Image (cartoon, rainbow over all chains, first blue to last red; front, side):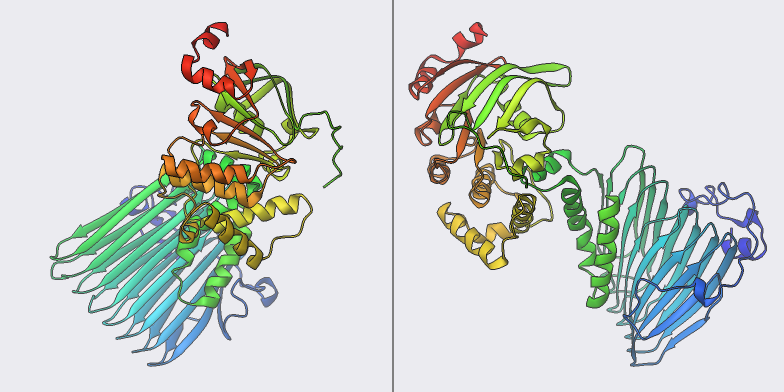
Length: 344
Length: 260
């Protein structure tokens, strides 16, 4: 199983399938009999403007698989960079980006996934944080209903560093965000948050694998979302605390609301602990918007759509409040409001 | 909002005629007639299962409560064709028997959104933040409520008594024209009952009406009704002055249950 090779060699046998344990709810081989032709290059007019426009001077664009391959933030430097991943048409493409953040440097990465058409796409990012470096990654993904998209992120965290991400998505025909983080401990910390708002027949899979390899590390995860229509949400979170990684503090929570009886939420939180003096907790809940609460709110004068939106915003808002970059959080909040007003 | 037809002076504020309603296949209201004139407080008493709570939900438009015949008007406006929020904007307020919790939404945020939604529906300007806070502080003080409680998520983790007090707080904030109090005394100790009743009595006015639904007479010692009605098996089977409540307290509902 290798999605990058499946795309490059146009070999559907390499697509991940339900027989791969970690992909059982996001089966691509059962979905695609053939791999589409390579996508054509995109001109600037097809690229347009992204959702983080105006929040950073520097902007990287990966369009139909073509774009920069490296980003380097020098030691001690503070930078905010927009990364746009734009897909159009019905082809297949794959890209890989390497990001290095030098010692003590800070990177704010404002990433968007746009368009999609009916393409098959893969974006792989390798992120290395040197000692004391930090990165906050905000992701807004709003793809066309026929797109199939996978985003893989591999993070190497170092001593005293911090990695934080908030992925917000409205899903696609099949979509997966996979984050793999090597956590050395040594006073470093990670926050891996997510929000999904799914309607129609959309699908979103938020998968993360955190490996605590050293002592005194923190991981905090909060994912919340809605599944309406015939949509399907997948949450898989695995935290492994290896032998010797003592004193680790790891928390994981996933709370879903199912808004229709044809929607589905699959959740698999896993904690594997082989070390001592470890504080770990995970919780997962799946519920529905409470009709009695909605009636109560309407009796006080709120229209039904406003009552639903107020409940939705308060439910998802706790994830947004954890974002550090204030201007980014503001942008994310309005992005969310625009989609909740329409969908929930 | 379009101008409402002016009720003539003899017409009741709340007027229910031949009201039939069902929940699922079960008919619960079976031809209920009731007139509450402006300025009056009427009590509805009756045995469990008589349809008291159903009446409050039918009037406020709770989904699942289907009116099959009859009419319900508030100041000549047909309530039955309005959404629950439109009924609220028309001045109808229900103090719930079991108030709901709204996780993540601070009480003041919720009340302000609801108040402004009502004002907008009536074509009025939004209330300013300072005016709103001033009003909230004054209402909270009247009801001897800790103001910090209003910053917490609505009703979340509140005791039964605190929730009831929060209902009356909202009633005071919205200043509705017609109020339905559904078993407001349940969950209240005697001191809380006094405070809450004072809050309710403060809202009595010549241009307002009130329907107090209760199983026990105790509440009516504090909120003195002008009229008392007995609801049994989906109909009003007896009406009288405040003395009727005392009689019910002594003799129970048996004879009405049999009559129905």
